[in-house]
Structure formats: C-alpha cells, structure tokens
Amino acid sequence: TATSPPNVSAILPGVGYPYIQQWNLTLEKAVANFGLRASYIGTKGTMLLTGRNLNQPPASTTPFNQNRRPYPLYQTISFGDNGGNSIYHGLQMEVKRRTRGLDLFAGYTWSNNITDSPDSGGDVGSTLANTYDRKAERGREPYAIKQRLVGNVIWPIPVGRGRRALPALPSALNHVLGGWDTVWTFFVETGRWLTPTFTGSDPSNTNTIGGRPDRLANGKAANPTIARWFDPTAFAVPPANAGRFGSSGRSILEGPPFRVLHFGLVRAFALRDPLKMRFELAVRNLFNH
Image (cartoon, rainbow, N blue to C red; front, side, top):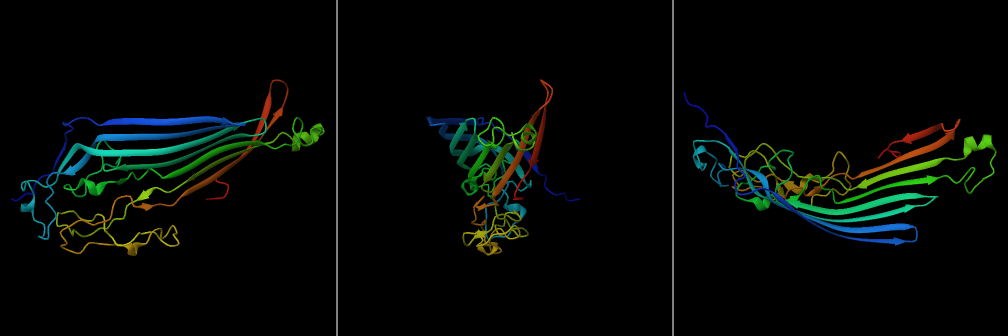
C-alpha cells in the first residue's frame, strides 16, 4: 500500500551558539529638586536560532507536486540553524522628585527592536515563510512597543495637622478631613505590532497554504475602531499560480494603544502606640480605558 512521505525535524546549532552584545551610555543631572537621567541602550543578537523547511521547493508558476521538493522522498524537513539576527536601540528618560509635598517618578522609553528571527516562545525562533529569503522576515519584534510612559505620583492633600492648610484643625475634624494622601499610577504605551495574513490558497506553489498578502497601501484606517483597526482593502491575496510569496512585511501594523490610570486614597490613623490603622481606597483603571 502507498504511504505518505514522512516529515523530519532537526535542531542542529552546529555552526555556533547565539550570543548577545550590549552597550549603553547614561547621563545624570540634578536640577533643583529633580533628578534627571537619560540613557541610550543598544543590544545586538547574532546567530539566533531560526526554523526553516529544508524541503520547501522554490516558488514557481508550476503547480506544486512532490517531485519539485529537493528531497522528494520526504515532506517537510524542519531544521533549526543559527542564521537569525536582531538589533535593538532604545532611549530611556527618567525624572524623580522626592520632597515633603510630592513624591514623583516618571519614565519614558522610545525603542526599536528589529529581527529576522522573531521570538516564538520556544527554543527555536519562528519558521521562515520562504526558506530561500531570510530578508523577507526582517521586521519589528511583535511585543516590542515603540513608546512607553510610566509614572507614579504620591501627593499628600495639604489639609490637616502638620500640613499647610488648616494646621490647627480640631482633632475630630482632622480624623475626617486631614492627613489624606493620594496615589496616582499611570501607564501609557503604543500598541503591539500586528502582521496581516491570508488563508486558503498557495500562490507560491510551494505547498504553503496562506501567508502574508500583497501590500497595496499603508494599511492604516482613517478612524480605527476595535472592530476595524486597519484597512483590509490595503492588502490583497497574491493571484493563483503567481509563483511568489506576498509582498507585505512582518509586524507592519501598530495595534491599539494602552492607557491606564490607577488612583489610591490613603489615610493612617494613630491608635494606642505603637499601633496604627491604615485606610486605603484603590481604584483600578479609573477612566475605564
């Protein structure tokens, strides 16, 4: 009886092992009650593990058949080698202030992380769509957002005993109105990177069903919503028997941004020494973003 050709898998990092190079430059300065820091950070990954199919036939206008494979007695031959690279550039800025009336920290990061071996969550990076064209996989790491702002502010409300407003507040009223602290925590960041794909056809005739489409325009929607975040008319499935892969790059669409503000209200009440009772109100995602 006839049997289907088998699949073969191998991870052979015989040409070497991945290694990382890092460098950075930091400048710090105190201005009035503020501490400022600016840093440039660079990271380069070389010889990263990448998956590819050694038995994928070249793209062709000739319909796929098993004899077009380099090794016709087998189907997919999954191979892991050290061909991947990555490069990261980042600018980080921080500001701090710690005084009696205000405790402030804020940090901003701009970064760009480019790789042809995106992290797949396993030992080997994602598999090349076209095993003969590694450059087509070069793009942003999907999780590497471009901009991020985080911060934390603790502001004592200046009312009550020991504070600027109403320092002689009667004890009963001070327990109600005085001594409150507010805590503000915020996160603002741009979206993760998305890759357009199509399914259901093999225009490259390599037995690769689906993949990245052709890119006809930018792809940004004029008024994006969660239901329609990008413009699908900016992409098209390559024609049948085109003998090529789609022209769209990887991680070319920026996903929805992230904006969150948390709020806290805190008050410590002195009981019999050394005991204190702490009241805290915490509101997560204050504006429901």
